Image 1 (cartoon, helix red, strand yellow):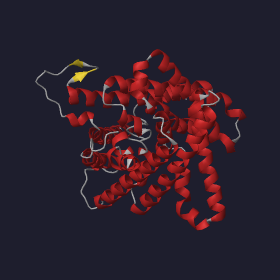
Image 2: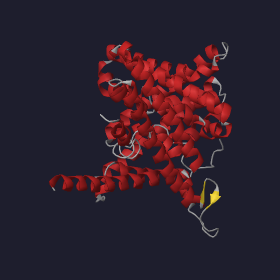
Image 3: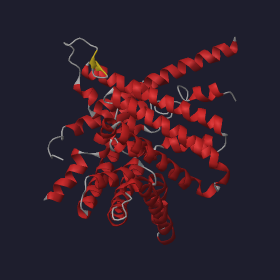
Image 4: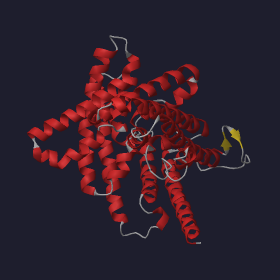
Length: 206
Length: 192
């Protein structure tokens, strides 16, 4: 299988947040502004890629029966490393992400990729699979963060982009807004997905 | 009184699902049916309380004296997952009826954000043992409340005419948003 196809599927067709609906907690919790959303997205991208690589290296020596505890231990180790690194180099981001950074450990998407893909494939495909899924996740976080920050406060990354007279609905940066924005985006992705499969079907007939 | 405030705060004002977004996978996955939601709510509340107590003990009696604080995360994950597995085996052996009712939920919560998140928050806030347990129980009851409310709403939804693209998860999120909006009305009642 070519690497581009492996990489690409995580971005739209199997987007972790909008299509698979996995790992939703952070997508809602830290997307009230773009900076946090992107930071979280990149942290997850790192963890999922590193975990895929490590799992594909050790998979030969892991007994089927104990694979889940082994995976979880690997993930917890990588997340702890990420935490320590962020605390040392980006303390502001570390403080903002708080508990949600630690909770990367229990993300269904990371365990799922280890189980579904890295356990059965070599190091290089696993790397691209993790990178693709991570990119899809980070892009989704960026999208939600952008919508909430731009329309909620009229700024992007803290710089005002909408006229000062724009008085955004505060609800977008509060908890209920997070649920609604994601709900509507899931709907939008369903519409796009349907349209794309219709196009593909037409092309198949022609 | 202090404990009562903490408990009510965890149940309503700082409801974990609707204001802090923990445990969403289960919240959206299980809330399709009311019966399952009640079972899940109970299971989460009891596991959460027990694993918080366990995690508190491990942190204060093992990790802090040995200066191994940086291992908190892996230790908690393994401890909680192990505890849930152990509980599953015990219940299966001694109370098969209970196992048939709740067993499936136990497996699902072994690695769940709420079950890991609350012990971590307890430890970070330097709570005493009793405070940790009260906070965990409150969070668990809050989770049960949210999921049961959500399941009742979703059962009503079956008679509604929802646009095709929003059916399923999309509309569930929008409804959860409304539910969160109503819980927002409680904010500030109990300062945390």
